[in-house]
Image (cartoon, rainbow, N blue to C red; front, side):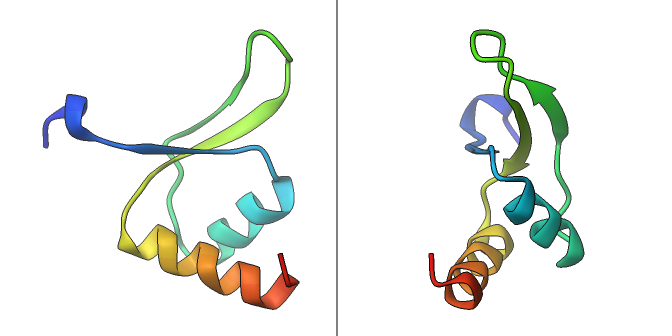
Length: 62
């Protein structure tokens, strides 16, 4: 897999990140955004991630 062709999802929601973890979606890392100091979890965008996000939205009505 070519690293230049990978799309990433930056998740700033702890609730969503916790849900994704509970759905066995693996994150790449957890880091701080340098300008705002906010924590985010980084995920590789793929079908499993998108399905989990869609399910989370229906559960939480977001």
